[in-house]
Length: 120
Image (cartoon, rainbow, N blue to C red; front, top):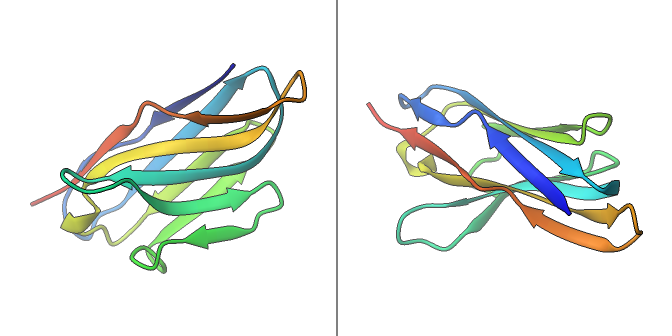
């Protein structure tokens, strides 16, 4: 089993910044893709950003230029630096990871979610 634990959410004013972290632990052989999704009240969960083990990134159009995803492969950790936050960024942010466990079986895991609220 692979577990993901997120941290770093909270309340921030519009224009402010937050940094989310997500650490993977358990029977991990290799993690291919790590990413962040978010879900606002009454809306579907949407991809925010993703990053491969080689460092290739993908962003939602709504966050390009404001959010930066990065990862530390030695720590199995992914980060999401969020700048110039807007009220519409308010959501529960979920970490996700896909890869292979120690039995060389594929896995896909989700974190429990962390609340980000952008409000004055």
